Length: 119
Image (cartoon, rainbow, N blue to C red; front, side, top):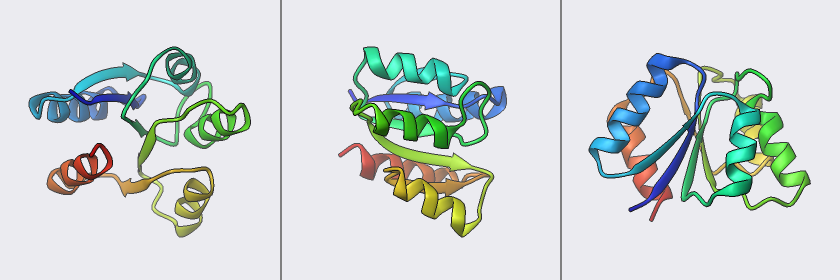
């Protein structure tokens, strides 16, 4: 079973992502801000992190930078964000993000991307 960390502060989006993934047999860990996710990543191993950018405490970009700067083993990362600008996608890629999907999500595309990243 693949382990996925979801970092999302919006309860509706969190429920949607978790319900979709759990229905497909993934094990899901939920965190609601970047600082909480940082601690969880340091203590656990994940096959994939689904990451929002706009988060309390530590935003998604800052979380990726902190993990990179501290040489902490970061899982493959799928950013799911309302930010759709090319500069945001480029910044995410520079920080080690593996893929980027904009909200609102297309469920079939979301699942296909998760499947591809967790192979």
